[in-house]
Length: 207
Figure 1: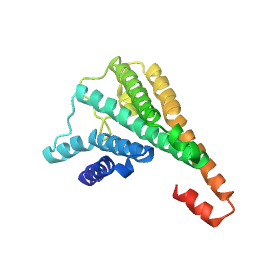
Figure 2: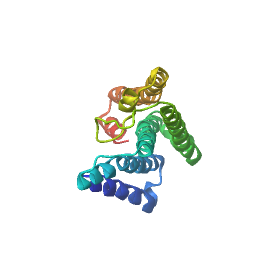
Figure 3: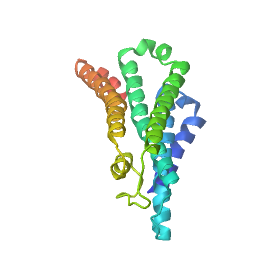
Figure 4: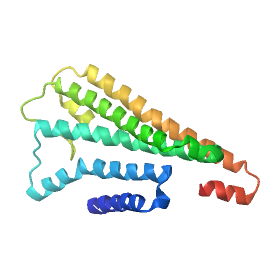
């Protein structure tokens, strides 16, 4: 399943890169989402497969923090990429004549860059705050990977500030894009249902 995920997403990236007809914002964002998906699954699955093969479930403290960092980065990027793609479809439906002007290459690159910067800064904050916590010498993580919430619960020191930052970031960086996705697609669907002709509805749904 891991290989299917990696090669499937690689094929999407190669298809978008090799076909000039696919050099449009929608497929540019799709290729970025595919890259994020490869990275997201690669933060946990290879380590899990090694654990199964070697029958050893040990992970170092540094390895655990590193895994948490990249898991937060690519997990949040998933949401951001989906919200950017929802915005792209919103513009395509509501401003079809100005679509190429609005969704120009500079804006597309800027949206992706801002998504990366936001997710990396959030992950760095969460990871650095993890470093201030103290843990017992040996402890068990009740999961097949190091997850932020589980690690905070295992800490021996005060975790109030960590919990506040974690939940605030989850609401802001998870709830924000999710609300944007719901808003974009609900507006699109309601607008399409308002179109009288069947051909117009088909064209809008196709878009």
